[in-house]
Image (cartoon, rainbow, N blue to C red; front, side, top):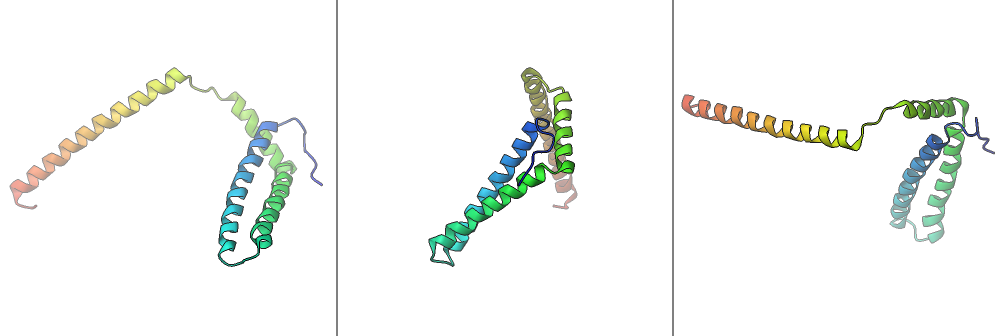
Length: 127
């Protein structure tokens, strides 16, 4: 069975990784079920095969996130994420405003340059 490597370390990173993988697996299984519906009339096959896929991939993902190399990576990732200095809401809002204003200014400048080229090409008879 699956043994938890370094229990208690990297707990949240492993849980989030497992949940994300399972969400993708369930989406794939639902898609597979819809695909099988067009080819097979048996509900056992339509829902049984995707269910087995979810179970098998769930066990596989649990095994992968608890392998020493994978678990050490996830533990280190969680440790690094704790060291990150996250911006405050005020800083993010301020930075977003600067980006939006700069984008509009650049759009106006590019519009002006484009308009100048259009007028120049019309005067030269190129357009």
